[in-house]
Image 1 (cartoon, helix red, strand yellow):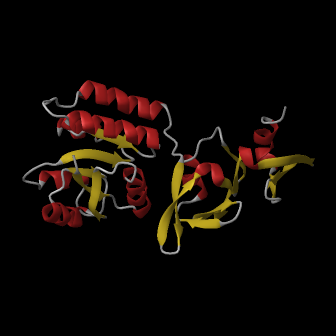
Image 2: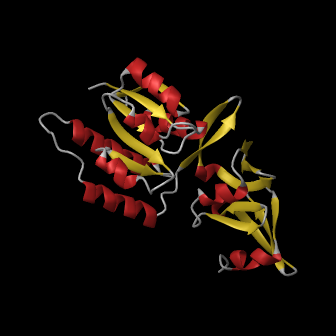
Length: 250
């Protein structure tokens, strides 16, 4: 059964990531997207989608404000970095509440719940207790994404995190380095670090994060370490982060 979908989020990378995930489901057709609540109301009115992916904190109208102004509610999957609105969302019979950042496996769980909600001969409403438990699980197990959206030539592309060699601070932004390219991210080094799995990525300098799998060699240098990556780039682990490097040595 084909379903029209509208994606609503004030961050372009978040909208693009949702499109990437939705591309795996050919029966879910994205007919529009919006970056704020006012545009969301217009696009929903124009396309009458069966499903919307909805952020909550947006300029102007919030996601909950948008729902309050609709005469007829579509199915809703919330996609937000804020968990304090979960109870209100569940009371609105949301299909699911995706807590950013989330990986493709968590997204697939939301789609499974969508299919259950819309299966023939079922009128089951979401179980608030079950969804609340899922939210607690999401908070306790960091849902680090397997892909992140990075800008390239006026659009955003999905970059598998395993391709990242290192990330360097660039003022309020950061540069993500791969074996054959680099991308200027709108997020600071601190914000980028929070989105990545600390079991795979290490901050070894106040301005540098490296991927453990990208390490080729490590040399002791004074009170710190020099780390050579697989592309030959040398990254110095400052004295304050020497213990981080020491902990990965046999």
